[in-house]
Amino acid sequence: MLSFIVTLGRFVHAIWKGFRDPEFRTLFILVLVTLLTGTLFYAKAEGWNLLDAFYFSFMTLTTVGYGDLVPTTPGSKIFTILYIVVGLGILLGFINTVAQHAIFGEKKEAKQENISTQ
Image 1 (cartoon, rainbow, N blue to C red):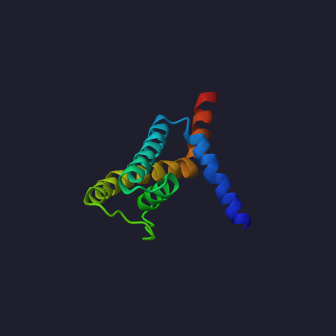
Image 2: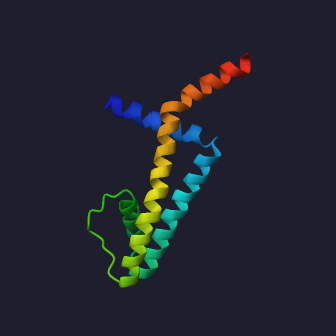
Image 3: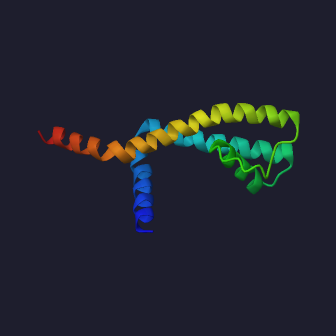
């Protein structure tokens, strides 16, 4: 349990520090916009409530896909294909940036402090 708390703390810290990076902020906003777009589309096209639509959007982008909710119309199926291709790329870019900040962020900050003091 302790290792989970430490890992969660490092993850939150990496996200917090990441907001200093313009690339991170852009990817974060793109992830939010992608999830919002999927949520609103599925709520409208499939008639799902917002929670179910968000749940499906999130499960789709994280490639979990339990299968408890599925698109039923041809338009929704085509949207889902495009949503996965575009959204997965955005989400993977965001996860990569978070990982870089978690792993290398502290080292970069230390190097920048050493350079600025010299």
